[in-house]
Image 1 (cartoon, helix red, strand yellow):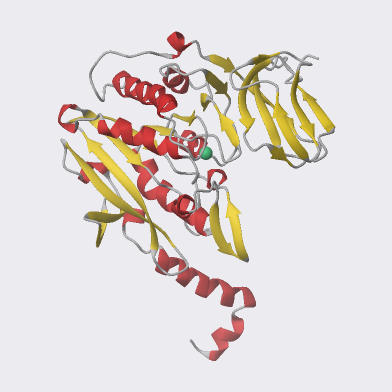
Image 2: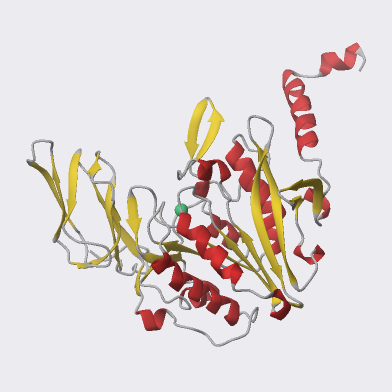
Length: 383
Ligand SMILES: [Zn+2]
């Protein structure tokens, strides 16, 4: 470059030019723009590694076990994600089942595994793709959040990152972007993102989903579970990223974190098989549904928040009905003196309770599922 043209470059150009080159170098993978499956050439534990997938490239009538190449770890190795695709012989709906977005939610992973075990691709139309251990570094530590190596370790909730950004400023954001752009979105007509409660907060068998969306309502009603939170929930969660991409999606919560709860897994396996039958992916008659389990639906959750530090005792348990004004938690200091008593402000049903028996101020002690009065025409709520 001649000197005079260098002189015309402003400071910003010097910064942008090398950045652009770096971006090109890391996202130059042909799959990002052309579509199609890209095999990296690596084989791990006998499974081929892909950095992009098109299910149509896989042989029909069988199951395929693959690793998806996620973002790199600080040592330069990649975080590989386990993917199972059951591709039917006949064309049909493509259903995606995800788990492990939070690293301490074991029953969610087993639910997806058990559904996949029941499938025979030789007798299927369409496909079912399981993406099992999405937040690998969080799973390695049995913890909810992804340990980003930024300025020291930050623990990042990956379920506030979707749809991610392949050129984002955190590894977890890039990992989400790679998965969403190259694996999840291109291969999904319907998606179900399985979770559980989190460490320190137990929850019921329930499903989060926006019932205003007809296919979401249909799916929820196919699960023989006890509670439904009719809400889009939070921005940045995976099931909303699917919906934003035009892919109907729900978020089941399979009991408590860290443990394997086979009793609560069963209705979610049954409900997911119902969904596959509903969409014609597999044959067979529909099993038990939400109507038979008497699922309670609420459009809001009331959080009981600790105002003091101390040791807590719940006066009501999961699934119990409560009324406005009813005392639900008592908290004591180390002397055993009562420092706080907490009451519900709503008529509802207990959906989640803090399982750690102590709390600092600000923690959620209980979620109570209830029905908020409908908004008036001007968007306000009646008093
Ligand atoms: Zn979760």
